[in-house]
Length: 496
Image (cartoon, rainbow, N blue to C red; front, side, top):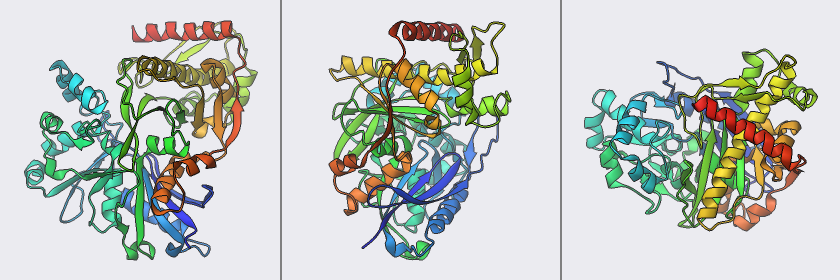
């Protein structure tokens, strides 16, 4: 009997492979950093072949200490979403570097579509806003700017995919060109109501249908990894984009359950159940997961700067030597300080979507020091999370749903107890940190394991979730209201 699920977690800065046992515990992990390519200002690319080579290396790396491919029940994949690959169907070679989700080269085209009044069409059908973030406009750029690409695409000689599709294509020796519903829902090409590629959207972005992958449930038969790659033929049985995989890993299976992942940025996702909620507050509507042919929807909000702010404190400002120091410094800062950092280093994300806003530090006095600046930096992530939670609550209330009553958190920042407590204080809701914080990779493992019977159903998966520590709100309501009002005032000044 197989002992493990192999989870591939292909992210923006690294590629990882993890083995999970039947209890959902990570038993072994291998990681390889990923080179970032910046051809021009605002352009970000990855070498797709380098991603595949790294994936194979880390997967082989976890098969040590007596563990062989025969011990693996299935493979699950989670990936950086929206990153776009276009490759030759016959040779399997990419026609260009992958264009990363962070890339802004299609901003002018997005602005043109907005001016033509097309954003409402995209938002109604996809739940997304017109932004270079998503895959569709990146794909159009490749077709228009790589010599011969459009002609080949029209003949069906090219394949488009997000990173999951690219990895599956290579794992299966080119036999399968598929994706899952969550990754498809981030392309600007997929109608999340009908669960199909949409002809009107394909026409607006000038994308030939012939290059698109087949869209499957998150738990499905995605193909079989070739025997010569890992030593056995292993089914690929679960796929989800990284934030949706974390939602599964956090067992957010009921409407109103919400998770927030604090990595470089912050991504908050709240389950809205079978009901698709159209946001009135500039949030994204998306597919949380599709299992057994049934679609579960979500609202999502993204913060551009979370852990990246701590890196800024360390690397640019030299206020701390390590990320871990930020906890003690924030705790020792003057609790009555009015210093507020609005971290719009690369603009502001949801619910503002102000790409031209820039960062500013407000409210300093003569006694403001390094500790107060560090505290203000951590507080800014709590305030931005409150922005998202309030927007989600308003959208859900308008749809007749119960707004989030607690927040399940993961990611590197939540190891900081001061930050987790401040988050609870600003949200006025419990913040729950799970025992297993590898929730993104775990979600992919759960999806694959459910499909092959390694794990039970979603109720069984939910029963595995354990809270390591719950942070309850302790701040007085008057102080919370005063602090949050101060934040909102300074955000208006940055936008203005």
